[in-house]
Image (cartoon, rainbow, N blue to C red):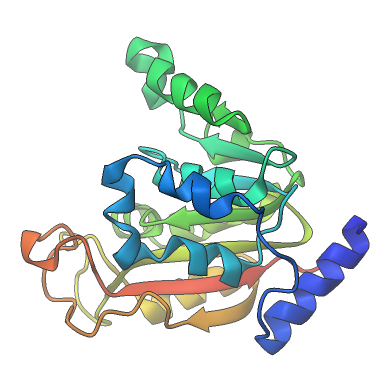
Length: 240
């Protein structure tokens, strides 16, 4: 199936909420099972398979893991795009200060379809990705540097995508009208506003990662939450 028909099928899936038109790689579940135990322990709260299916990621795609950190999403995305696909794991420059980023390079080599990117998002080649994922990163850009920085963070994601490309914007949800800085959270409507100001179309405002037991009053890292916060999850699309 050529790229035009793949993207058309994806758009129909996202628009009408049908089950995924194109399947994940046949060995997706096996690769997910082979991940480190610490990664798998977070699956119940983060719902990786449902997340990549909702985003519509397909075998052979190029996907960016924005601010990849320890690589939790990098491993998930690697399994989702398969050996013919590619994951650009954007780590930024900081890991180069620790053994020249060897840990990140070793992880990439072990997965086989991951390219570590030791640059800011603005340094990732523009217009090259089919999809991108950012999880738990937007709140810091907004809370510590303001609205302009929040829009710029999302705009960098917009720029790396091909026309029609999609992204998942996921973060710890905070209450509106309060200072979420120390809680490491961000209000739902704030995320929505930043997304729209960056030029994205909102495809889905998903409830997949909701957790009614989290009232947003505690820090997202509070031990009593067990790393299972109530989360904002938008699927967005760059206009074709």
